[in-house]
Length: 372
Image (cartoon, rainbow, N blue to C red):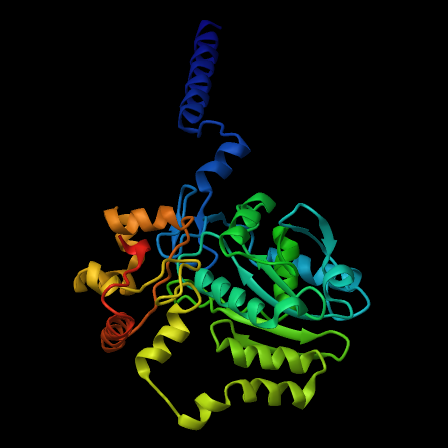
């Protein structure tokens, strides 16, 4: 009997020891929230190869990193909504918010029966968006009071988490935006839905520093005619296309061409003039005062060649390095980022020489006050 009792005690001790050993090797309980936090990964929507375990900004384009979601979740939601949210046409009728805080519906309020010019932007963009917006501001001036009556401009942010109505309003004010041009934000999935249906969701390009191409979608909803242009295209060409969309037809083309008849007849093709007109004139003049950026008359006299070369080729780096001149100009002109112009060195030299010649022809006594 005693032997039996001893065996039972030994068996009990052995069972307890095994259970203790197993429990000691079991993982500590972790909450679902902790697991999700530890496994969270952030990436840049424009540059998917940029990944991080913490939130922050993309070192390439400046866009805020977003937490990764299930693959194709947005696309699945868009497909599910497709049948329910189309308003009388091809376009989604989702709700957006203007820079003034007003709620609007994309199809009913913005597209239906109108001629429109639409682009996708984000306010932290370092490259194309600033020039894209400045060029569109040029286009608005060319079209005059037709904007807001015959043609409507829309800039929709692709970073709605950051670009609130207040942020968009401040951004619009920097570019002296006039009536008839709305800056819009909304729910991320709704904006993805719009970009998908408009054919703009395939634009991001990882080979570009900015991560996307600057496209301007122009269309007439009533006629069903739509076309996509580069937002950096010649503003007079885009204005002519918009006039044709508005129903002015061939007459608009004749009027537009006639205004440039003298220039066309002489075939005065100057590379420096062309570069300045296409890359700089949206923000600067030479001798006609400040625009979005400073008047550049005299800049070649008061800035050394190396600095001019860098401000054209890598203005963002000058700001990051806290260059005193670049930083002062950045603050003075409402912190509008000068985009990289992506010019070959030969073109940079041509552009600098053009500004030098223009300054000399204006007279040595006239120097731009903004450059002092």
